[in-house]
Length: 569
Image 1 (cartoon, rainbow, N blue to C red):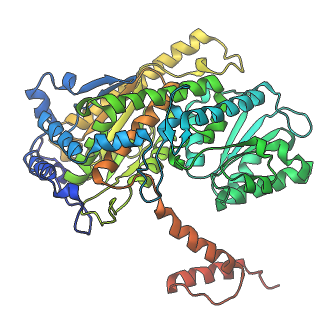
Image 2 (cartoon, one colour):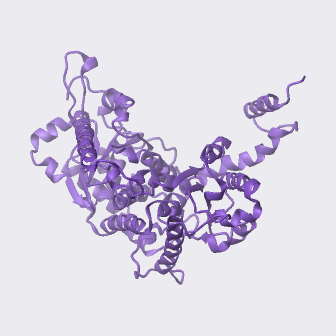
Image 3 (spheres, one colour):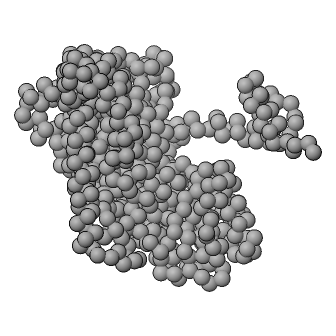
């Protein structure tokens, strides 16, 4: 290692920032062994590890489930992997995993099964939970979705005036928005180009306003996605959308232009939506795990039922790998274990996800909810404050954009930021388009795309090399310490099946980390308090009633009230 190595080259204490007595796992012999091992690794660098072991890259690369994943550029040895796997075994990871697939109520705080994996089980499989054949139920809804999506795509589903749909607006928030909006953006080359898709989540009025600019009420379809049909932000936007439509076509047109993804038939009907056009899902599907359910209806309309089936099949391929592969050759398990390694034994506080594919621009944001809402918790499954760090901060942007923004910090900053680099061996161009338009000279376009893609991937490979091995220089400002850990994830092509694989890969990584920390990755009580307080504050903003908050909040509300009062003439 060069002399300019930053302070993040040394391992941190293993207790992190917790404030309690600790959970069982951090009192285990396996945890203590990793603490001691991390101390011995403090002076180790990747340059030496590679020089001493010519077979390292081959041994630490795994081909599985459509991926080529290189773990060799991590600060690990064979002993590190053995110790991490022993920790997973001590935590009962395999038992917890099997319980999830079996439909056991592993969401203990809410007494629910966790069965997003059932959303992609093959037709004809059997899984009975609480007396219900779950897989048959799933495929009943998928068939309902396919019938509807095909009708919209053919032009058979029409608005109140008989015109086919041209614009689809998905109104939801959280998982009811992040999943389908990310996936639709990722798979745009496979989508119908003659249909416009918009996703509205923010309660800021400009979000809906921007989505409806240029839209024609006669040819617009709204998908209202809310499990309870009571989410404040979603219902506020939905009511405004209904008014926009009814002002032109009348309230009797609402059933022709609105459908619902929900479990609450009464509220759906009260809103004015025909419950025959309600697509259901189940309480064992968490919002951030729901894109493979009816929440993905807008995606199915965009890419078609057959490609949506491919999307689910990609998820299922990774499910099968996660369920059956040995822990030391299991992709999501190893990704999760490396997350534990850096979070708990090296003091890393964040994790970067860097896709070298412009269509994956929304993927890091999607993973922020998946990871941080699942594992951003300080209490374990027994209600004890944990004595160690849990979920890292997840962030990222596509390459090569990020190289001209935050890579400076990755290469020469003082923070340790493990990173995942995601790339593909084939370019994704308009040649994959759904066929709505002539794309011109295909041969010329493909040649140009190949040249662009080679340049893109040259940067991809160069960045992981530079982060791992750095560069010595007499001028410290031009020196690169290297020893910055990365996982390289390569796939052949970003298509529906590959996107499904990527989503499932990270779902199971998050599960692995939560299981080892003994936290419930499937509730999200942390989102509740702020929403409750907002409900109380909202009516106070338009009155002069006395306020009972803290002095800061009172003053802010008073300032807002004053700025909203009419100016005296």
